[in-house]
Length: 238
Image (cartoon, rainbow, N blue to C red; front, side, top):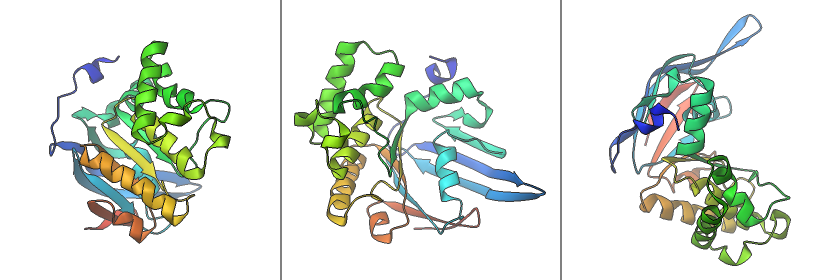
């Protein structure tokens, strides 16, 4: 584990978890510069539940990628858990992402050849957990999302909602500081989507910080706060 991770402060509910300070993400497209993020500054607290919203090209996906340490600012600072993410090298960024963040995607991104248990265990394998401990953690999380009886099944044997529950369990396996959810109900029918949002609300009520991208206004209402983006800037906060 890097020294950065060892030196992280112990934050409590309501403390500032994320701070963006005048952040820009600029892409060079031929001779033109595209400002995907254009001077964004915001603070997000431990235990908050945010929905990132906005039209296509507004910067919401770029924002999620940056917050999820999948990208870095062109300029400006990103402070996460007291660590300056914008100053990390690629190895530090990868280690930070593995240990401190959890991801849920619209398309689930489960590995079809692996069982439910093995999919949930995957981040723990990369963290070097011993097999018995990882299996116990996977069983605990499968039970938490209502799939304790499906540990030996593969994704093809599960419904879309069940696959997303596996993805949520996998995102929780490393006890992340933040769960990043990118259109988590986008491939689900409305009833199943409601079940997934109920689960995310429960996790938030238990203290998990969640940042979710969605284009659906009714899904965004599940979040405690909504951040609307336009032209790479924060348009308004509700």
